[in-house]
Length: 422
Image (cartoon, rainbow, N blue to C red; front, side):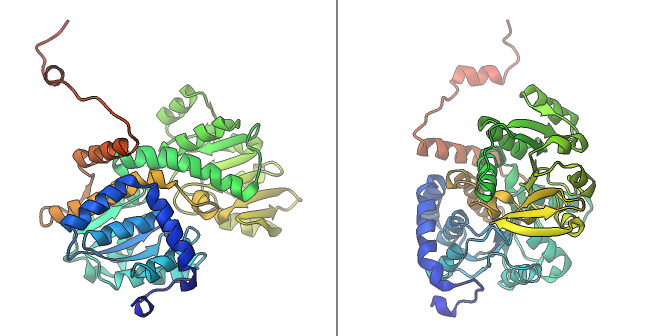
């Protein structure tokens, strides 16, 4: 049946390799596996269609299979053109009968065509990574909004966009900020982004990080993870921040803190992780020293002005996969990674499956929550109930063969009373 399935992937002949990748990721995603088994019995998503715009990786494939086990009809497109694993896309179509619209390196026109391909399935629920599906629904396909259950948002950038829509009165459906669950942002952003960003940089450059002067722009959960992993590998790390409390936190964590206009002068390596645009601009580029490397680990390719840098450069050439040399007027050379896109996904494979296990457990349970709450939700941005967040943590600890304590009756009473004192 799969050969008649509507899809747009690079090559269905890649499916054998993709299936192996999906199966390997599944071995490292025990929480999602438990939820999938539960979904297969209870079918909490029966009759629901889900349209997903996520990174098309082996980990995401296992989320799609979990949705499907729960009874949902699913379709998938890529949230980033450079993160798509073509073999995984092929396997989802050929081996699992899931419509996929994703090709590694697709251009912007194709990217938006694929968003529309997913929305053509008229999903009742969307799973977004960056809010592009939701934005399209609110601009060009508004007729589909009525009757939708809502949208689950995976990443910080998307949550920021959706909260802005809610604040401006533009949001027209309930949204679940999956990213704001502790078992998502604390672990995915800190441990996942920390490791995978360093992995992407090393794969693209093969540089020794020990002794390098690295500048991390932003000290949110992602910045914290990146800075700590770089330091662990011997880099001399400086943090830049616009939030005085986070800047102070970075200083108290033992990092040097400086302004970006000063830090770019001595940086061997610059990594943006802010969720904002033009953190590093042409003016910053002109101040960089010979041989400086710049990478982005924030969601969109706007954190450093890659397009402006390319226009300003007098010459450019690709030296390795995801490594581009830009020669500036005057002869100075700097190196941009992955065209300014997410270096951990464009130059490597993204977060380890063990981290995405928790993130996608939240996504799966979030979809079931939407179904349970059908007809009860207002048009606003919600956070997944704490009980579900804690359930994910319990399942993960169980999978790791770890144990944790519970409060005694007396302890619980003490924490909820005011009578007892010294």
